[in-house]
Length: 204
Image 1: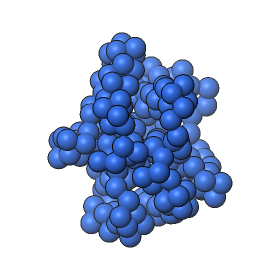
Image 2 (image 1 turned 135 degrees about the vertical axis):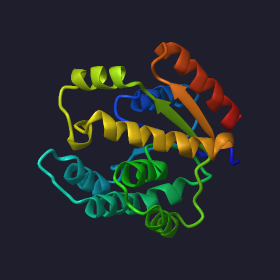
Image 3 (image 1 turned 60 degrees about the horizontal axis):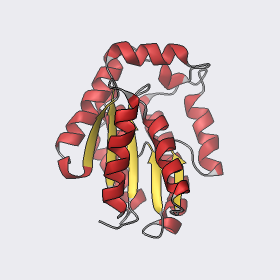
Image 4 (image 1 turned 90 degrees about the vertical axis):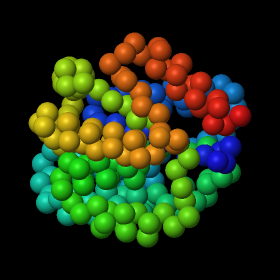
């Protein structure tokens, strides 16, 4: 693995991934290590425009449109990623496995279509390591209640989130060497230390 890998933070809503990517960013800043940070959907200016459309509570897309919008947002980020690939650490808040977990396991879209489109976009770009943050139903909905505003993907039912999280866990099981599962129901400082210790191994 490159010492400047793509590191992805995955997980359903309320699982703590966005918090942990901030902790990692602070560590890299403190140690003057070059990196870029993007989110999906979002990242580039054009991708952020697509993000607003996808997550708007008034949007009501069918599952195929949802998939294509997410991939359009990813397409707009590819040049950003290519410029830094193997030159800087790349932190991504959700990436290709989110598309599989949400659109395939959650919404039933054919996984072959998703994989084909991802390969078409990414070419030789490969994720180095993934932190999968998991959360139980109680903490998921407690955390969502605390949010100042909810987007369209914050308002699914427990059954949907359960299908998506189980999808993530299946992906983790088939990629054990490049996945670390973070139990976000545990004390947050322990998880911060766990992630930073793993990060140091990845980039040393």
